[in-house]
Image (cartoon, rainbow over all chains, first blue to last red; front, top):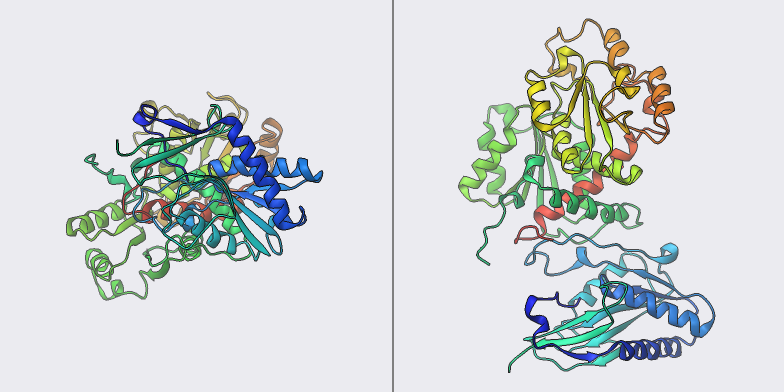
Length: 190
Length: 333
């Protein structure tokens, strides 16, 4: 999940992806997903709350448009599967909505906005296993900022963004944030 | 951060330990917890390695089993201890029993006791010793039963959308009802308007001053309330309370039949309520005295939420255990 905005985050923020960059990246990812799965059969796109859900919805719409047949999007909440529950204040659970009710035998594309430590994806894989046995699971992210703490990599990446730990990456999406789409980076050593 | 952690994060002794935002958080998380209830494999790893003791000094079917199921579905280890069959029957004091359990290193004690304030007392003893054990009040005498009020609110919201601006009539043995006391607090936080209906003998002393302070209406006439002849009009929700014969030493009403005629949700009253409030719903915390405070027709009516309440009980208790136990940092947004 992306970092929460801080009051100072706009001071030295620089935009790394604009609205049209994000649109192009998603379109490319849609084609990549179709190429890798050889079509839209048995495909389901699951976003990880919160912004991954909006990205999953857009990705499913793009794939539907390209293939001319409907590909469903849903959401997969990982709150109850996180490994940092003890160290964090509790958060309210978000909605999980699996279209069609199951994932058995399907190709599931997990979608998140920022890939960082990989711990959210680890939690998502555990959560997914409780819903059934997908034929394959792929990972699509808008931004990969590095610093993995687990052996996890994305299959589809909007933009690789080398960052330092002290920098903050924030994703804004129309339809979720009531602002134009953007990815900005702020903070870090000067 | 230097800001002190809210004390409410460790125990749930009263609905008053929560604010409106915390109630909202528990109810919202419960929606997602109910999703677990519909899965084939009902198990999430959230409370893995946590231990929850159900310490029940009074009989219970739904509260105890739903707390046990809630803990188990979240992978906590849950153990039941009842007053009968424990060292209490050998004369051990409540303090020693509580300290013994806490000394084993448990994370939470879910407690039901016949004495009002028992859960507060145990929480204070444990806090003094700094054991870090959470206490959840699962009913203390005639004082409070916070998780019941939360699941009542959850159930009604699922059916009616929101409690804000809704009119809730709470009917029956108000004097002995901890469910009533907890509901009064949570309903106020959620914006509902409340009318309390009871025979004069089962209305707590000082009720009129209480009603004036907390802004609810009192009535001794159930038929007038059902006809909408009080502030708030026809109720959206009828919350029937159990007549608690085990807490009565007699003299509260002449005969059970007379109680039913005055304050029972009879078949005729059900018809009147359904006609006046087509979307209206009926709640009862259980166990029901069918034929006394609620007729079988009303208990089994389409507008009855009695079984939805039981089903919600597991989800709401999962949410409560999650918010109390999952984090060592307390609750936040």
